[in-house]
Image 1 (tube, rainbow, N blue to C red):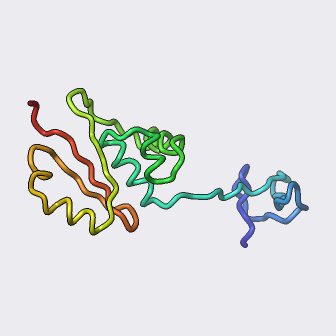
Image 2 (cartoon, helix red, strand yellow):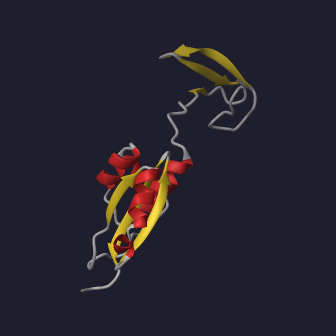
Image 3 (cartoon, rainbow, N blue to C red):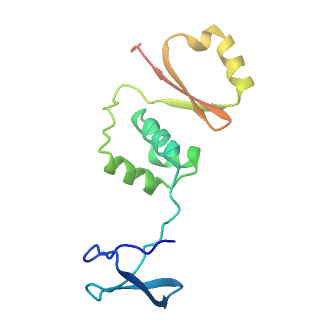
Amino acid sequence: MKNPLCPRCSALEVVKSGIINDRQRYRCKKCSYYFTVNKLGKGIDSYYVTKALQLYIEGISYREIERILGVSHVSIMNWVRKYKIKAPEQTEYHPTYKILNHAELVEHMKNSANLKGAGMMITELGDKYMMIKWKRFKD
């Protein structure tokens, strides 16, 4: 690993200066500032961030998205805040969803009664598919 930049003065002249709490400590030669490098963290694939935001816009709750994707609802709330996503007002409908494998999806689509009177979106979730439906017209 290359030596990091000094967080105080951004100098490249940094030397190792011991280990604290199992993390390498550094000292800047220019300003004599001691620091440790931040942990990288888990880092979630951008695919899941995009899917979570799409599902949120479709009206699915944070907890439901957590159960579907296996990502913390707090992370999803933070992404919504970070990207300033506003879900549209949904007073007239509540979306329903099903998670299906390929064969189940094909069977569902064969029945024409399942395709009438509702809006539908199908999205890929790994090796499965998620079908979101909502009523398009008021009865």
